[in-house]
Length: 550
Ligand code: ADP
Ligand code: MG
Image (tube, rainbow, N blue to C red):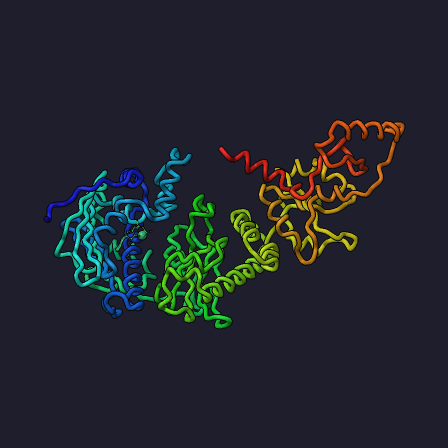
């Protein structure tokens, strides 16, 4: 039957659509980018299936994006000859929220941010297909997969709660998205407007784009170019295209090598701060697309980079990756493991250079992304690897003014010969660190102590244990190593007899609760301290972790 089946949008989708449709987001034109990027994805998928020997063999001519504008009917149509969708795919892809950007957006709106103006947030995420409803009062999607007995379907919605799906014999292989524009957004049915928008957002689409029959893009895979040939604006634009981002890159690593493996990559460290979504370890995909000789194997190929570098965006192309390597096999493949190691080393070296040559920008980066580096140290299995990443850590230290940072490497380089170990103290703030009883003794000895203010710093440093052959020791642990004999002061303090009386009392009272009671001359302003073996320095961490559990 040709009468449309009525479906309700999933609740989260409805909420998203409601926000999108009502939003006063001023950069509405980004919906063009979203739809073209979907068309481009669909084409890359078709190309991939074709090289894998699944589906029809496709020549370059078969793969294109055709855009048409119709001012009279106020429509904009974006058609691709890509992979198309089955009925089930139409329903799950366009009826529920799968896309990470949209999901993150909805999470943010549900969470505390709902008081913020949604328009400002839409820009940060990009809401994919649904962004069409910023400008369209109805969207029709005609689609057909590429199999020879595939049936065509039409999806249609006004973006208010429900949509219909019906069979559609006239749908061509691929997908056609028809936006019926709102009166106030009719400018998007103007050819020149669309050309201008495409120029801004879609120069890097890997398939020809036509507007009313005329090709408007030149296809240039930026990562294959000589780094010297690529201008900053090109990088900015490419970054936004591959990273689906709205900011600029902060650092750019355009890197080519042939040994130990062939790699052509552009990697971008984002300027914007990490989103909540990226921070959660479990739910996140990588930001790097994997190509093999210009054929996209997988967008967001999480296995290409180590997980802790998931905030890095860009493209990795390698001739050494077999084209028929299936996406599912990526994770376990030996070449991919090799790529991952090479890229991790290269990124770490790149950041080490930044720290040396441009410490100011590096520290800004560290303030935003340091937590990922720390995750890298914890999650690495090899000590060498941990230490390489650890050379990127910077801390305040007791001998430096507040706000100034020193790297572990520099700290070690400046250690006096008499000092054996790297000392650190974990405390919630500089003030508390300076007043800490654990700091008094080291302060008295004039030892420089690294101050760590993040709760997980202690766990990271404890795991790291060593760097450049030096032990990393918490101030608290140092105190336990104390062999100083206590000095008695019959005049102003406790005499020997009184002290031994107090000690007996404490040992008796605390019996079974503590391992030992000792006297020390290391304290200046505090009468006593409690120290704990091993987990000592993690106390602060444990406290903050447990207090965060609702
Ligand atoms: P994303 O592109 O991030 O996955 P979107 O909201 O833009 O999120 O699109 C949702 C899904 O709809 C896509 O993942 C894809 O499966 C499907 N889709 C959208 N446009 C097309 C298209 N032109 N061809 C085939 N599938 C499409
Ligand atoms: Mg998309």
